[in-house]
Length: 201
Ligand code: AMP
Image (cartoon, rainbow, N blue to C red; front, side, top):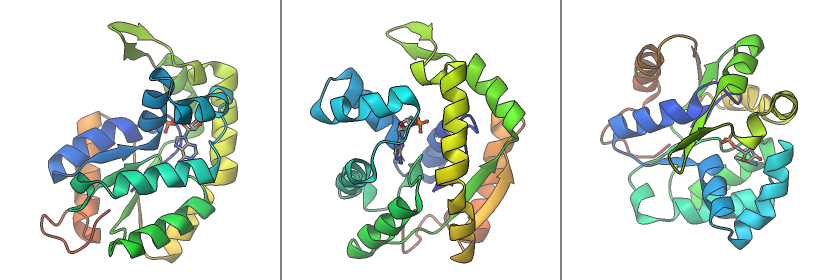
């Protein structure tokens, strides 16, 4: 699982690391955005929270992840990006994985100071229908709110996973490739990079 504030580079790293490990990257933010674009019921439920920079309620998010984890491609392992984001989500994830006979191997926290995060998020542009646009939730006032939500609701997961013996912190400033190498070496020590590991995460 990749933990870290908005703008830490979780999405970018998740794609590369999941590719190297040969497992799917499961990003709750991406799943929500796809549902918003597709105007599904789930997208309609999530949109107002996302636009405000708030977390989508746990019951909606957890049900969505449970369905995703039960798909075939997640049976041999997976990389979570952007989930869990609250202690309640982490507890429910642990229970769901237990039911599936799985457990997280490793939680990697990407550490970046807040000035750098604000700089990255306000300059970020994403490709939509062939055009580079700013995500609505990357507007300056929403960015500040998302960072506050992170501090209050998600940052406590760092201590929670540390007490479970699963946490490794890595500095996430530098070139994408450098951060990937730090992540891959960290995964080796916590067991997540085992190609034939007994569990997933
Ligand atoms: P992200 O792309 O991970 O920054 O997520 C974008 C937005 O999707 C967040 O600001 C939340 O509104 C929503 N979201 C993504 N993951 C979660 C989660 N685990 N719990 C609640 N809301 C989430």
